[in-house]
Image (cartoon, rainbow, N blue to C red; front, side, top):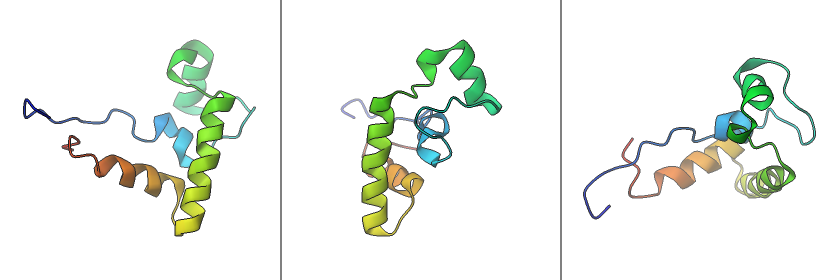
Length: 84
């Protein structure tokens, strides 16, 4: 921020985890996330901690009448360093 440089978020929905299409304890079997879960698990954190955060976001989203992705993106674009 001090240098006038913005941030371009790489994976604002955490590789789909914040899309709501993944379930705690179920490893994806199709798509890009399945590939990363099987081959590069460090890039796809499907841990209980991650799903605890998703549960909290779900509560916030439901209270406000929005989806989890809407809450996540809204939080992100409110950060003044995010430029795109």
